[in-house]
Structure formats: structure tokens, C-alpha cells
Length: 353
Image 1 (cartoon, rainbow, N blue to C red):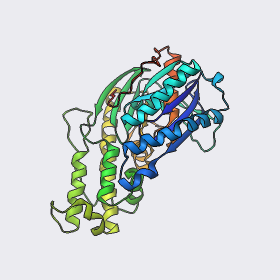
Image 2 (cartoon, helix red, strand yellow):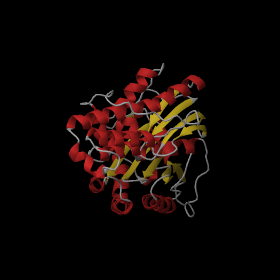
Image 3 (cartoon, helix red, strand yellow):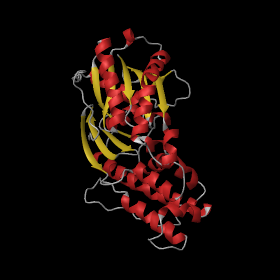
Image 4 (cartoon, rainbow, N blue to C red):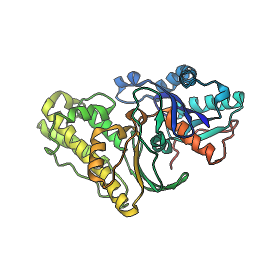
């Protein structure tokens, strides 16, 4: 079973071929992130235009890297939500057209679910990948942390899951981006803050952890605001001081301490809930997915706190990629989930789990 996965939910144009839901044959990602850095975030129109230019060359490269022809492909999987409308549209229209022309079944993939399925890849001959030795077992607890999502989900089996909790405002990755802006660090915020935090003291600032009504829900707007107020106070100003002027007034030491303290609280927030869910549901596996899942700080905190030898997928498979889409597509095909109609499949930008 070989599935071609296509992912264009945000600023990465990606395609990959996965075999039997575990073997990574190819993984090609072309990011337009450099085009967005000047704006401090993804500009939807720029991302969509980049996808139009890149989509077919990326797909062709994925097939070539996998040493496959279209005759070797058993189906096409594509992200149809959640994401930016213009970006999703390019991937879905391309996948629909290819499914019709090549006469392949088409599988509609929830981007958020896909992030977790990257953990099912255990084999590859591609260089520079470190994959888990074994696939996760059910019941499986999944923590999804990215620029657009912060969710805790319990899977009883493939396609049978329960959403335990999610963010009520900013996603954790979004909070990292905003704190990076406050401290004058480049986009994307996660890697920039992690690098700065290595030089700082994580206990200089006591930022709050949100207390939510839902046992497993998250909130990051409060800690983001607390960072802003602390930064204003650090330069001797009150709450009326513009955040855009803070980077020029903050010292490198202050920036490092703010980043280290924020990162500690943000990671403790998601790990606290993950450990709580582990203790209540006693899953056989715990996995993480999404761009923030590549964070060394998060991985170290989870490994330290969980009474379970958690394993992690390669960091290249945490950010948006076609491999996670193809892997979930494999399991849809293997478990005879209904294929989508290539003539009518629509995008769903606000798709939830």
C-alpha cells in the first residue's frame, strides 16, 4: 500500500510517499518561510502564490525520491483542513485533479490528526532521519502543539478518539511567536526563543499558569500578556509603553531571561496536563505532534515527568509535511475508510477534531 500525501495548509508545500503506514519512501518540503519573516508571520496571499509555483515540482520530486511511478501509487491523501483557505485550496484542487486523471482513490486528511500519525513511521532508507523503533500502541495519548493548535487527545484505536482538551485562545506556537515579537527575536518564535532561553535564567520571572474550568484545557493569552508587562517593567515603563519599542530598550540578558522564563511556564503548562491525563487514562503510548513537538525543552520536560519511556519522531516530521498526511492516508485505505469524491471535496479551513 503506497500513498502519496500532499500538504499545503500553511506556508510549506509538501509531498511524500509512505508504504504500509510505516515506511517512509520520500519526504519533500519546500517552505516559503523566508518570504514571511519580514512580516513577523505568514501572509496568506504570499503563501498561496508560493504553493501554486511549487506544488507540481514538489510532487514530482517526491515520486522520484521514492523511485515510484504513478502505477506504483495506490491512493492520494490531501490535507483539506484546518489551515489557510488559499493554501488549502491549492493542495486540494491539485489532489482532486490528479485523483481524476490518474484514477486513484482520494483520502481527505485532517491536518491536526495527521501530526500524530507522523509517529507511526518506523522505517526509512532516507538519510538523516531518526525514527522510533516501534509504532505506538493503543490506547494512545496524543499531545498536539503547533502554531495553530494545542490539543490533548485520547485514541482508543484508529479513527476512534476523544478530544480531552484544547486551547481557549492562543495556541502555544502562536504564543511563542508573539513573545518573540515582544523581545525582538525573528519569526518563527519557537526556535528563536529556545536559542535565546539557553542563555537565560528560567526562574527570574514567575509567569502565571492559567487555571481552566476544563480539566485538560489550555490558555496562553495570560502568560503572553504577563511577558509583555514584565518587559515593560524591565525597561522602567508602564503598560502604555508600545510593545514595538521594547526590543530596542531590552538588554540581551533581559531578553534571555524573559524567553527562558516564558518557555519554562509554557512547557510546564502542556506537560502538567499531559501527565494528568496519563495518570487518569493509563495509555499504552504517549506521542506528541506539531511544530512545537520538535522543541528540546518540551521533550526533556516530558521525559523527566512521565513515568513512561516516551520516544519521539524525527524533528523534520514535527513541522508540516506530506509524510504525516500520507501515513494517515495509508491507515484510511487499510481500514477501508470511505474515500472522498474528487469532484466535490471542499476545503474546511476551520476544521476541528
